[in-house]
Image 1 (tube, rainbow, N blue to C red):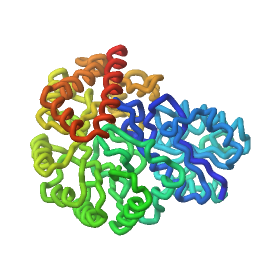
Image 2: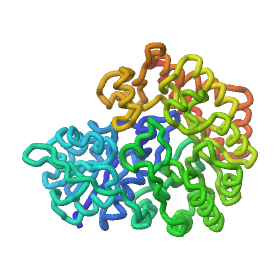
Image 3: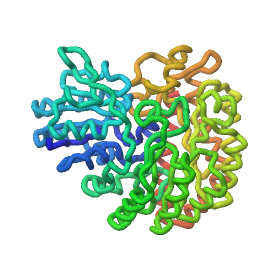
Image 4: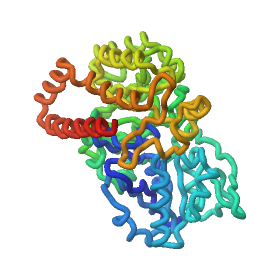
Length: 475
C-alpha cells in the first residue's frame, strides 16, 4: 500500500467542510460534521492518515512539514472550496514532488474534464462513488487501469469508465475505528445535537428527487442502499464502548426513514444498546414508525421542510404535502421527538408573499430549532441547470456560492424578486422565529434546567448575533 494521506484542506475559519453538499460554508453557529467520506476511504487503506484541517484548526503551514511522509494525497473537495483546495495541493506537491495527488467529491465528478486541467499537479479526479477506486490506486495499480477516474492522456482528459455503485454496503469497513485513531470527538459539534456527538452513515442514496440536493444527483444515486441492521448495530455497540463520552449518535443518511421496514428493525436493535440517536427524516413518517423509533432511543429528527407553499414544494419535487407535514410535526411533538427544521428562502416560484407564508408556517410548526438557507445551485443538479436556462443564476462561476469569508451568497434572483431581497429574508426569518416571546421563554427555561446547556447556548447565542450582524452589514 502507498503511504496515504486523506485531507480535508484548511480554509477560512469555521468552514464546515465535512457537511457534504448541504452547507459548505460558515453556519449561524460554528459547527463541524465528521469527515465521514474521507474516513471511509481511510478505513480501506491500511496505514493511512486522516487530517480534518478545519475542525482541527490546522493551517497550511501546520500540514506542510508532513508532506514528505506520504506517497499519495487524496483531497475531498467541493464547489465552494475547489480553488482553495488546489492551492493547498500545489503547496504539498512543491514540498514533495513525488506525491501522487487525487481529488474526490461531487464537484470533480461533475466537472471532471475542467478539474483535471486546473493544475498540472492533479494526477486524477474521481467519478461518483470512489471508495474502491481509491483503494485500488493505493495498492499501486496503474491509473490507466483504474475504472472511475479522469486522467490526462497525451494532454487530453481521458475518462477510464464508469464504476458501478456499491450494492453490498456491508463490504465497507467501519468508519468509527478511523475516528478513534485520527479524530478528537470534542472538535465536532452543532447547535442542535447533544455534545459531544458522532455522525456516520447506515446507507447511501435517496429515493427523493429534490432538485437542489447534490449527492443523490451526482454521487450516491436515487436507490437507497443500506447496510444490514446487524452490521450497523455492531458498529454502534463498538462505538458506544470505545467512545464513552458520546451523548448522541446521528445517522447522516439523506433520509434514513426512506425504508420503513429497515428503520423500524434498526430502531429495535438500537434500543437494546441503550444509546441516544437521531437522523434525517422526511416529513411524512407515520405515527406508528415514529413511536417505534422514539421508544428505542430516538431523540431528534432533522427535517427538511424547505417551504410553506405547496406550489414551491411541487416545483422542487419535494414529494411532501403541507397537510401531511403538519400532521407529522404534531405527531413528533406528541411523542416528545425534538425537531430541527430546515428551510430555504429563494427557491423557484418564491415571491415576497410566499416568504411570508413560509415564516408563518415555521412559527406554526414550531420546531425546537431551525436553519434557514439560501438555495445553493450546485453544478450537477437539476436546480443549477434550471437556473442557467432561465437566467436566474448570478454569474457563471460556481465558487460564487460562498464569499471569501465563508458566508453563503445569494446566487439566484428572479424578475420579481432580487437577490438582495432573498438574502435579507434569511435574517428576517430568523428574527421572526426566534424573537417570539414564547420561543425565547422555552429556550430560556430549557437552559435553566441544564447548566452545561446554558453555557453552550450562551456561547452559541453570541455567535448567532454576530452572524446576523455580519449579514446585515453585507446587505
